[in-house]
Length: 385
Ligand code: KDG
Ligand code: MG
Image (cartoon, rainbow, N blue to C red; front, side, top):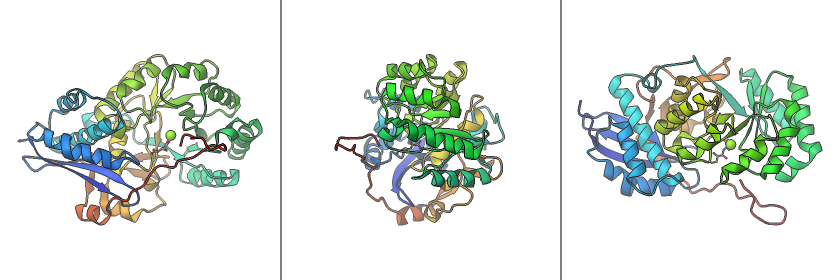
């Protein structure tokens, strides 16, 4: 087989929201797709791929995934960071897709084969009122989903009002009973000691995990939370250099690796992080928001199905069985399926990542400028989204 790369293209498409996708083709005409979506900064990644990464790849052997990864990570000299590593992720996923198509195997088989029949998911059930949260939870439970993310508020002041957070969580726990697994995403909105207080206060609620309890910059600050509470912690969606996750895993400061395959550099580094986690009794909970495309989500679930220390998988709204996103379905075909009743997702037995793309639909749904929310505190100062 002639696996030299003969063409590379990047597209930004907005079938419901913006996705950046990478298409690689080999001399033999095999096509691989990858996800390089960086929410709110799509055009920066597109320019990097178009002007630098994709032209430089021409003629390289697509079958040498690790070699290409090392080349793009180390030989740019400037390494890591969300823009560079999201572009790298797009290439890496497309190479795994090609490798699977070449071998006639799903990517999870290339990664060692299935360790489970499906990947259990959690559903985002946040709402403005407790009744709204409970309604979303009951809808998810009706679909068989047993892990529910119930963010009672986005306001850090409300987090710290004892009657508010603990009171709301007690109401939710009483209404749903002891069985559903409950998650809260703090989204880095609290300082370490505030988060420690929240983690400790919520121990009687028996959370599955507290997500992003602090901002990602200072890893040492995790000790402040960890030393004070036994509430399990999950972190990593904001990391874009795989090495950022390692001290937290090696020192067992977190219980779940939440890196995003599309931001950390693709399947190649995420698989290594999962293995490091396995050796330290830390499980995976890879990021799976709406702003990851069906290609990136498929890559994530391939890894979920293969790793022994899988913990849980976040599920974007477009995968849910009872919701339809026609634009997304026009652009992307195949990929992850919700398995009704199991509380999990699975992949059909297709070679590669198993997602194809309709280029006419891509052209119909062109890029739409957008930014992430920009919240402010009461006094007008910047608050983390
Ligand atoms: O682009 C930002 C989103 O990916 C993020 O806000 C979603 O925190 C998030 C999550 O856990 O899905
Ligand atoms: Mg999050």
